[in-house]
Image 1: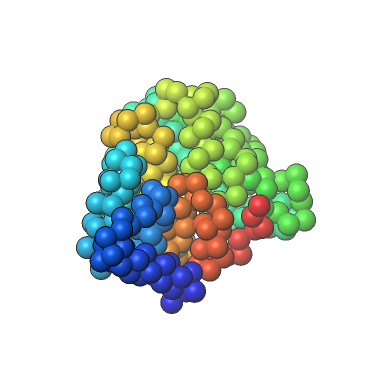
Image 2: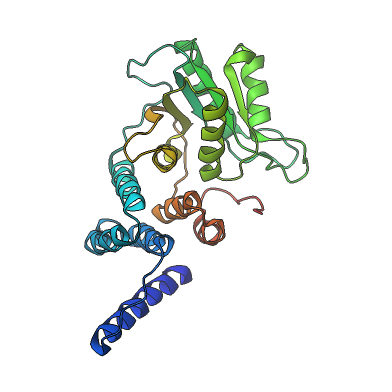
Length: 290
């Protein structure tokens, strides 16, 4: 078990012990912050999955007492996580659902680390090939290319920039292509993409995640979670993930603990998230994070 998880478990046990002592001595236990409760809940599920549900239910009770609004949002996020982790139906090559062919629809193409010289690796090109088929199937929809600078020997190259160039060179109209080129993690893909859509494309209501098959559940989770967190009221999200389109990768996995780190990053604690990434990232070497 990862050192980080042991630390979290030990901290939780210590907090519980102190609470019992305070009850026994007649003193009021110190209230934990919402962030501390959320992180314990997320790490528990990342570590133990459904076996942690009873403890998570108790944590939700504690969270409601501290921040009712946060509890409502994270209740929805945890339900989404359990669903995306166990039953996301993956559509290969193109979404099969009948979706609106308007600019209400947006395909979000998730990036992949560039080669040192700034060129695209085969996996990213394969994701773009799927995106191109989606763009042809829905000619009125928008396409977001996501990903910042991950080329170790070419600071000017970005994943999103290279992706946008490829799509335009292959026939997609430039006015349909949106570039999000600041992100370094999938969580940042979600944050910065939602920023751009809210500010410049408020008509977008439906998202389709385009990536390698092993990345679809994580993308669905993070974009759905970001929509939940930024909604004005719980349950009133302005955008939703409605489908996906995937390239069938020959290998690759993303651990549930990696997803936990990404959710913690969405919650605002990047430092803890990066510790988890470096312990659990099992696809390719993560570029330096600041």
